[in-house]
Amino acid sequence: MTTQEQQILLSRFPFNVPAGYRWLIDRGLAGFEPNSALQPWYLLPHEQVFSLSERWPRADEPDRLYAFARRQDCDDLACFAVKNDAEPGVVVVHGWTPEGYAMVARFESIWEWLRSVVTDVEEWVALGDE
Image (cartoon, rainbow, N blue to C red; front, top):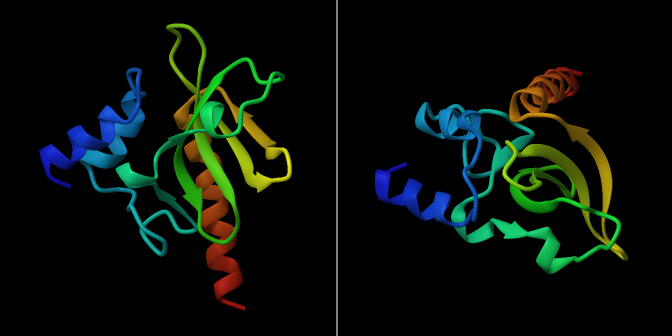
């Protein structure tokens, strides 16, 4: 990813993204399309990043949610959960439900979410070997 492409992507988020997200991009450890390095997860390219809080507003969600990754085998999205000026956490939701989305999991940091991604990768590889 070029510096200009990275700037366009980062401009889609109206807050400072976690350092771990930038680190993944800088080192090319996660791709921007299905079947990339963290399969079954991939990062959303800039044109697919969106605010769940705007697309599917919900009164019961106190955080502003911004989708940044998607699981390729279902409609699960990883979202930055932004509250005030705190470091964003990560929320995984199942999107495109009648209510907009359903909460799947909540993580305190991108690092915690990445640990769960490694488990997903492990399961994905095991299923492929059957």
